Image (cartoon, rainbow, N blue to C red; front, side, top):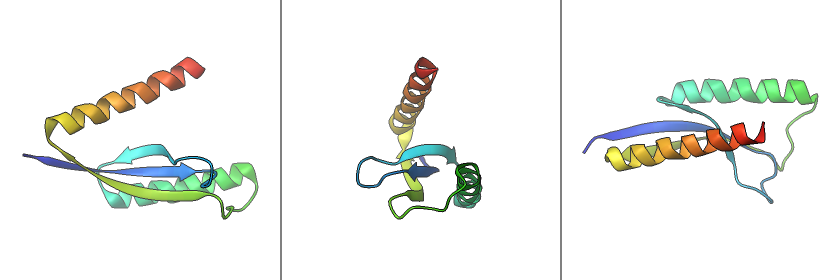
Length: 88
């Protein structure tokens, strides 16, 4: 069974009240880490402040084993995209 590893960049603005949200997905860790540093810099530049001790930024690794896991991931992405379009 083929395994696909993906890396998710995540951000949680309030670690005691919420779960992290996925910013983007990558097929290798280096690209995810570069993207995370870019996102952090842009976020704090636009907010004009420094990181709070209640915030969390991370790169999470997920191993997807087989077709069922990949289909589940794609369905999840589709659901998130639908919610975002519903809010706009």
